[in-house]
Image 1 (tube, rainbow, N blue to C red):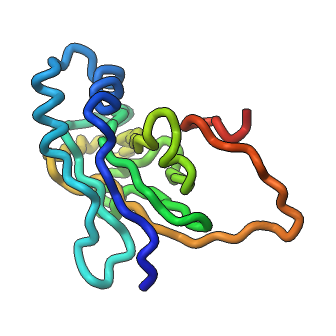
Image 2: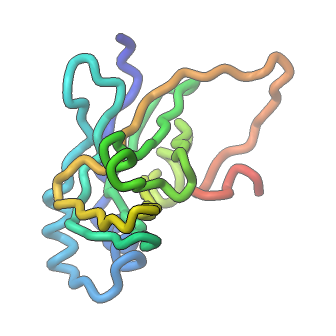
Image 3: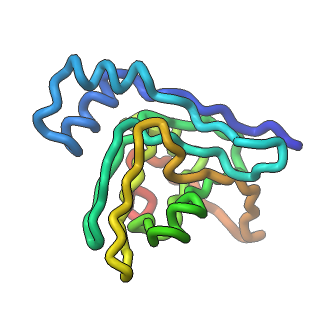
Length: 170
């Protein structure tokens, strides 16, 4: 196996700003406790392709409800690699818990963005069976899989990223 990446936490200041944007009214002390308990993504077994991202909070979603979660995680990876984020199989299969952008794409240069490459997940309970999904803090909620990629022979991209969603098309 190639070792090409390493997970880190974003700074507390970045996490504080992101958390307050998603969950207004949370105190600084509560956010500090959440931050201190953030778990870095891990593979469950030697044969696992996916790195489980653990929920920093407990939550429940009724059908049609959405939540945006700042994970507190960033990832350094070598160029020519991308981290794809998918829902965990069991949550998707049992409850139709879906990521709003279907698959999250984390590029290697996102690590250096102004927001420190902070990875967010936005999830929706897309149940058509009326099921409520409940996730306990510390439960694996999404999984990230590293994939190597190539570029075209005539590629001449020279721009430098500074931001998240939509920043590569500006």
